[in-house]
Image (cartoon, rainbow, N blue to C red):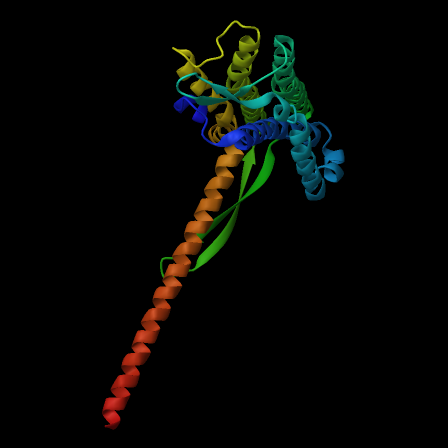
Length: 304
């Protein structure tokens, strides 16, 4: 933000280096987390039996630690190229910029960042999600071809409330679903999951591609280093896009995943029910205590 809204850097040399280092660490960590999530989904769907021993809470904690450690290591070059430079003759100012010994070093750094933040992650995501989509498609096709042409009986649980005493009764009703309905539901789920995976990869490409391509073009002297003219709002938008990628995925899941929406709805309804029950309990307790105080007061007056 200081780069876009202030002509001079006012926070000293240490914060110039440390701020950009932590910024790069957060970027690398975010991208690596999304990449590891794609690998975890690949293992869980393509190798479900192996996933029981691999995808555990203990392993997740280890992976998180490794991600943060690697993020710090991969971001270490920023500590050497970021520097505070004094500019101006009559009016002194300070710029927090990348300084390298030669344009070749600057180009190598931007290529390095482009590879670890874009090329490698998007390659892994495309491979993982392609295998996942292929596996989902094959499983659904095998299920459709092997299913017998006989109706399948399912049990549906429901609750009925009595009008007399308000008591609830759980009812179990049986419903027959034919194979055509099952195959139709599988096809819808399959298309929904595959489309969601494509959208996730597409959003990653759109969010991270512009800012990394901009940095690469600056190193090649195609674009100016200074934020002048249209470059300032354009680069501000690119920075916002890169950070918004972590916020986009939950929205995609919420819009496109039926299971995610269903579980979120259940969680919110449970919390609302719990809050209503707590409110009713507290109201009942306050009324009971008020009635007791009144009874005690009346009893005392009667004795007097």
